[in-house]
Image (cartoon, rainbow, N blue to C red):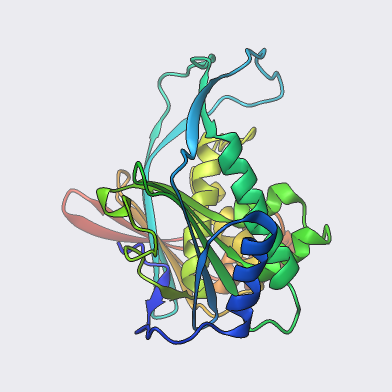
Length: 307
């Protein structure tokens, strides 16, 4: 499945807009940061190269097990997704968890003090230059790159989410779940002071949501205090339903899932999806629930089962 979260657009090296100049000057004047920006469609790209390390290891203080945290029953081995022709597609591989480690190794990977300061300064500059409601920007992609070691941390977020978090319209923990975070390494990043390795693209909402759903599902299985205990399918569908609900996204006609190991596929319409998640419809609307179609592949045969 494809993991693309953007639409390719040809970029011409035009003069910076007033918005770019405003952001770059803010970084340069207040934080002595030489950043490079691009605007593609409604996406604002920020490239912040540095010669200083971004991450380091640190000792983690021992902590007693949380008695309220449930033990995970399943291991999520794989998940991917895409959006095409107004259909969300997800496939995953899940197995029962056979072993559980109650103790960590006492080591964690964390941002250096320099990285944390740089990260905060870049976000502060966003706060002071991009949060005007009339700003013609929907998404921000922030790339912080160690061009000495070839390590990059990338953050993609919906600007309206950041506006809401800034005025406590949503908790910061919730905002952090809405940010697409990824760290990568490549020799192509080494010495790249102007961001030549970046493919500047316009981020599209359905593709952004697909990636966010995948991240939230991973979190649910691996980091949540309440991982799926019984029906992991219901947990996955709940995440998909809630994410669409948060953004009031309705431009889809189906959600299709493929449980690779169980060889089971499901197809849900938006009405059927509404019966899952934290804000699911109540049972008194069950008569309009429709059919949940299970497509089961077993012994070379295809079986359809309505629910």
